[in-house]
Picture 1: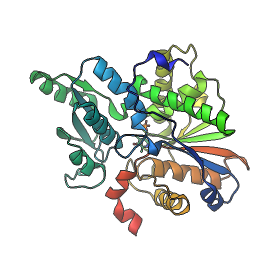
Picture 2 (picture 1 turned 90 degrees about the horizontal axis):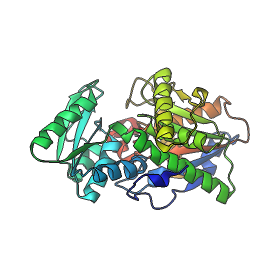
Picture 3 (picture 1 turned 90 degrees about the vertical axis):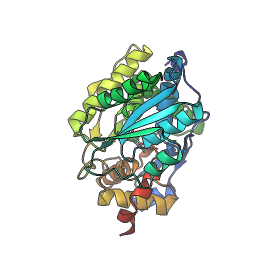
Picture 4 (picture 1 turned 30 degrees about the vertical axis):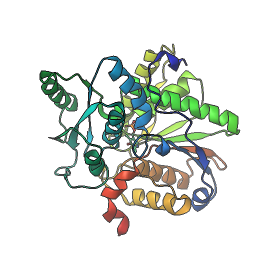
Length: 333
Ligand SMILES: *Cc1c(COP(=O)(O)O)cnc(C)c1O
């Protein structure tokens, strides 16, 4: 697909590694081979998947003459950290609207990403109640800044619109090239599924390039039908933006909700096990909210015999390890 028709900033200069995880695969019984796509190593403060999406979104903001970026997320949002990081790099001001999805969860003195918001020089933080209309809240901030003569640009939560999802179409094409040049053939791919842009971009990249590898999304928030609908809609909007001339069959979109636990960002025992297992077998850090829960899903599916023996499975590591430092207690016990 022709992604060269879209402006981007060039934040992603080279392919992130695909690594085989021999010790981790063995710890899961040795029946399948698990590989990992290291998008946690992308550039931008502490890396992570939002860099690929922001590469396109910030280019759009600059083209529209913006001097200020506004975005939103949860109180320990990786997306907010990376948006702020790239805004700093571009010389743009950045304002954040944080949603307390868990009541009273915003602590100004908290560690993890919250600490990095301060360190990176955020211009302003507005904290709103869980369930607020985040776009409306960001527009309020934008109106105030416009009245002061600023030119704000709103990046939606997770940079999960069709422009942002182009970053993961590009990632899928990068994986396809790596498979060819490295002689790897994956039977299955497992991806975290949150605000949906990552999962939708991967699906759009698969369908648009006629690659028939099944993708399993692991949801971290919404119930399965809602999450799948969000991914399906965004994947099709993305293919339409590209002008691909194809659309996603509904059955290609699978996003399990069995690994969310008590709710978004709330720890589960399986997440703790997954984070500890990858750390102690391969020295790779996951995160408590997304990649840890997604990996707990992969582990459970392997144990249940969901994947055929001898399968090669690619796990997409979307980053997020700074959030670990806001969850010390659940790893110490
Ligand atoms: C945002 C995020 C995700 C989810 O990606 P979406 O595009 O929002 O679905 C996964 N992992 C990490 C570490 C994230 O920050």
